[in-house]
Image (tube, rainbow, N blue to C red):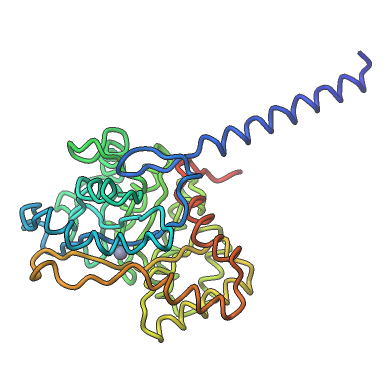
Length: 343
Ligand SMILES: [Zn+2]
């Protein structure tokens, strides 16, 4: 074989291997639901931030005895069933540990409705850390991560149900040592498990502080969801962070006109700046609240489909753009894989 032929053969081999690696990667990607692993291609239309049950009681008083599982299912099931005509295939439940996270309840709802549900590992430090165990003060980020990685490997408690992402919450104005520890623990957990980090964060400044910690750990911003990004009033600040590659989640959609207009404006802004590929949408709605008569009032999970999508489509959004936001982006955001900074 002449030298030029050998070079050509080598290039050919390289291309074939590269294609093989790429096809394996996309075929193998999965999400982790409360009923087990599912290929990411089956994720479909996804609500990326909702709640079935939230309990705001002080951590010492928390207990699954504060509610009757069957009553919760009876109350919430019709609201999840309402998603079927809109072809919603996946529902991401964002209730964290120590605030009523109940993987078995979610698994039962998923079995009854056929809708895939994701639950999480991680701890919530927002709300002045009142939903954190007191041991947090003396624990290192590594020790916290060990617990979360354990949940990812062995399941949550003795349920055998594995988390599909990491949910943390931090305080906006006082980014404390504990907040830093939670973000660091999330980074360590991500690097071990490939689970995406979703952080309850309001302002852009707090999102930036967290991305700084991701950088220290070599975690790519695409592994991070800035949830409640619509709380930030400066669109320019939202743009800056989206351009860094992280997910910006506008997840407080409701039927009222003023919030709807705000979401419509945000989507138009993200479209005009070519950043729709970084956007996630959801309601942060629900939920059954123990302690309230019959669980209190539930806010439905449907305003996105009944109101926001028709609204933005009347303003020129295409079906392709909508599908990007409610199908493609969630699949890319939640597909389990380690995302390290490429040096
Ligand atoms: Zn929430």
